[in-house]
Amino acid sequence: MEAIINGADDSTATSPDRRSALTYRRFGDPAGVLQIDKRPLQDRGRHMLGVAMVLAPINPSDLIPITGAYPHRIALPAIGGYEGVGQVVDASPDHADWIGRRVLPLRGEGTWQSIVDCDADLAIRVPDYVPDHLAARAYINPLAALCMMDARDVAGRTVLLLGAGSNCADYLGALAREHGAKHVIGIYRSLERAPRLEALGIEPVGLSDARAVTRAAERADITFDALGGPVGTEVLKSMRAATVFVSYGLLSGEPIAFAGSCARHCRFHLRDALAGMSVGAWQGMFGRVWPLLRHVEVPAGQVFAARQWRQALIAFARPGRAKPLLDLQAF
Ligand SMILES: NC(=O)c1ccc[n+]([C@@H]2O[C@H](COP(=O)([O-])OP(=O)(O)OC[C@H]3O[C@@H](n4cnc5c(N)ncnc54)[C@H](OP(=O)(O)O)[C@@H]3O)[C@@H](O)[C@H]2O)c1
Image (cartoon, rainbow, N blue to C red; front, side, top):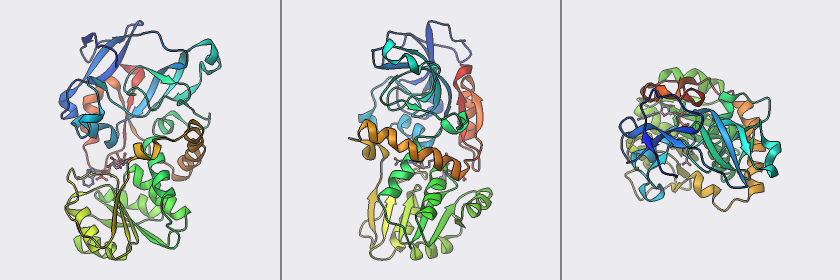
């Protein structure tokens, strides 16, 4: 990342020769370490696009690295955000046809900034029929769910989702049904998630009903766990022999504390699934993402001006909330 030239006040407007970025210089609680910085615009390489950002979500996957969960992988200072949508405003003559297009500028700089520089090979063109609020969320969770489901044969099986009600679990549930799962059960925390789970064909089970959770675990052939902690541990313990438990998140903030399960315990990280993927395969994945977004009918998010990022973080922590999205045009 280029040098930060000054730590700006949250209400400072962006000047035309600068870009604003939600940055962290040390790891810790995102509310305590994030700040808006102004950085100079710089020349881009021939293969790079300048993308004026429009919207980006706040996902658990964005906040966990800021806390310092992967310090060896992140060079500080760093810009937050792994996904979002914007419009190409600058490109070399070789890529002049990109100017004005809506794209996802992915797998490069953090997306919580006003202008993102992005490798043209990795930028994803957004079809006209996909609205910004969906396009902004088209990467992390849809791709994670597609990759996890591609790696498992769920046909005729009972699938258990821990952390149901989350965006990623919605996709997993919908894909499991599409791939012929016999039954899909979702363990949710907030009761207001239950009607939506039922509408997606997922049997809702409350996290607080420990006996029902154990019964669901005993029935499950494949569990996708985003919780970890005591519930993940209990489910892993209760699963039958020759079943599979996939850990892909730690929403509880605690790891699984159990070895020696009958179930096969494996971990999923999207970055591992994408490592070594060719540009063609990467671009091709989005041919499957757009129909998935339509199929699942993703709930509306709650939009905050980028300057209101503190309020967005407060909203993020509220059980049962909608997904917070940052309006990056309003830095
Ligand atoms: N491994 C990977 O490559 C990968 C990729 C994508 C996502 N993920 C993981 O997938 C998970 C879901 O992400 P998302 O973006 O889909 O989430 P999301 O839509 O923002 O939803 C978050 C969900 O987490 C629940 N939650 C938060 N804290 C909880 C707790 N302490 N106990 C139980 N439930 C809790 C919320 O419950 P309420 O219903 O009460 O609000 C909400 O349903 C995250 O753990 C993320 O890291 C991993």
